[in-house]
Amino acid sequence: MATTYNRMWAYASRGRRLLGAGADEQAVRAVTQSYRFGPLLYLTIFVLAFVSAQVSLALDTLLSIYFALPSTLTRGRARTR
Image (tube, rainbow, N blue to C red; front, side):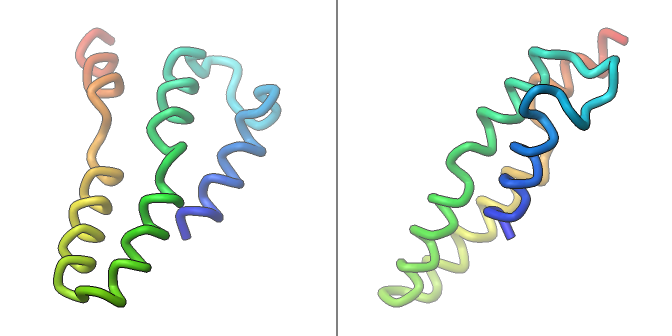
């Protein structure tokens, strides 16, 4: 799932081909940076499941929460507008 999302985001944001005209360049870069290591982290957690299912599940839950919460960049921009 993370890999699919990252590929879709890369396609949409590369060259700003599917982004709205008002999309903030700094926000686009911040989103790209924050999701860059997602697939690698999920893969690592998947491999860890063969060692400890409980630890893998806990880390997967934490990583999902991290990606579900708005970034500090997004929260800061929402307050200033």
